[in-house]
Image (cartoon, rainbow, N blue to C red; front, top):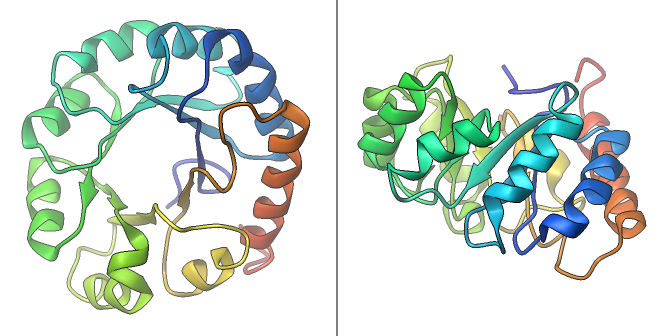
Length: 206
């Protein structure tokens, strides 16, 4: 039950409005069809608006690091469709659902996971994923509702994407392993292709 064709979300922390379109196009061409602009990036709402206008029909554009409910309607007005948070805030989750957006709250414990589900989330950001681990996610999957999707974020790259998928992840958030400020669109696109192949190679139906 992936949010998009690949289940992979590109996290462009630190991206600027001037470079976001070229990088976004490179990501879409590589098959990464969800892009998150964290709100602690320079002028993030401008980047979201430009991305949504250029690739919004081909890619789910969203905002990340959302910790303030007031940022949800701003993101929606800019064209965002997904809201990603580092924590579990029922108010942010409810605001996103009410706005017709898809929330991805950050969860690090089963208690947070169930609180996020109760608030309306069906896609959980396992963060930091390298701390919880694949064994931890497998244990959670045994008790969480089957329609709830887990997406590890933190320490995920082409070397372990296949293992996360095999462990039951519905997708993954790709951060500094995919994009770092100053990277060229060609560099980001090449990394995205490698990660897309690593992910899709685990299951011919993905």
